[in-house]
Length: 177
Image 1 (cartoon, rainbow, N blue to C red):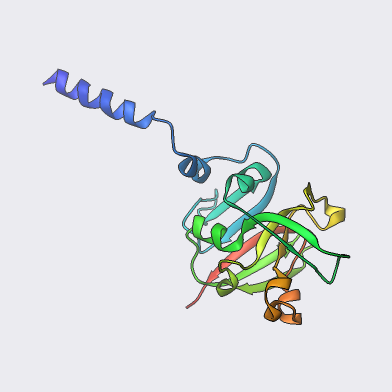
Image 2: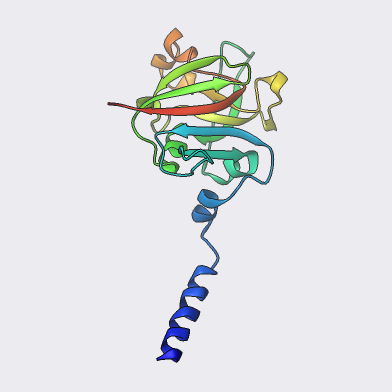
């Protein structure tokens, strides 16, 4: 009987010490570098000290998610720009976020609201690179929600331009009621 218990304990211990898959390690890992994005609200991945759902990302963690890249012109830059980042749809899926509204907040506390229905394939990304370089705060970084304006006429409107928040630091997911 004692050997069975010890065997079961050894099997459990071996299971618990198995390396996590890349996806699991991202969900349970702490940022090793400076936190550049915090996501709170109606998400399933992550828990903050106060018991609220929260996930924090450093740049390496964001880069470990599937990357999306596109070229587009913007009203804030000259010429065609190449942006690379994580698709908003991929981030929301990764966090198992509820549908509703995303409250995006910049470093200077400027905020915008983005409906989660904007998070579609071929839609906006949270860009961390522009023209092959990471973006400094002076260059609208380190994160910028950017839409592929040249891909759809719909995106070339004040509604979508106003949702393109740069110097992004926080997303709060508010579920539909």
